[in-house]
Image (cartoon, rainbow, N blue to C red):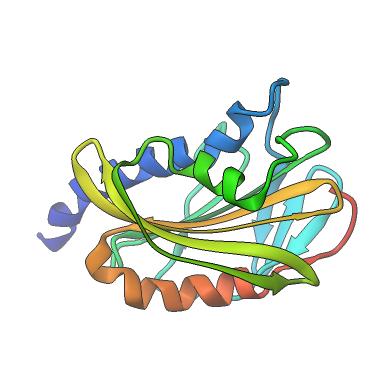
Length: 185
C-alpha cells in the first residue's frame, strides 16, 4: 500500500530529473550527447574512459532510462533520485559553473537558492547549489554539483522531496565526494 503512495511522486520526480539533467546538452550551440554508457559499483563508464564515484546505501536502486546517457538511482525511502552525467568535447558551453548550474534550474518555478558553495573536487573547482522550487506544481529540492575537468562537464544531481533532503544528501555527498577522473572520456 505504501508503495502506491510513493508511485505518483516517483512519476513526477523522474520526468523532472530527465528534464533537468538534459538541459546542459541543450544550451551549447552545437548538437550534443552525454558520454555515460554504464555503471558498475563505484565506476561510471563512458564512451572513452571512466570516472569513480562514492558508494550509495542500499536504499538506492539503479534505474536505466533509455535512451538517456546518464546514470540514475532512485530511493523510495527518500523519495529522491541521484543522477550523474558527463558532457565532453564542445558538448557544453564553456561558461562559469554558476551559469552551467543555472541551466539545471530552467524548469524550476518559484526557485529559491538555499545555499551555494564553491569547493575542490578531484583537484578542480566545483560548485554545489541547493535550490528549492516546483516542477509541474510539485515542490522539490534540487541539489547539484557541477565541475569541469579535461574538457568535460560533470553533473551530479539529487532531486526529490524536500522533507527527505537532509538524509538523502548524506548519500549524495558520499557519491559525488568519491569523484575521481580516471582517463579520457
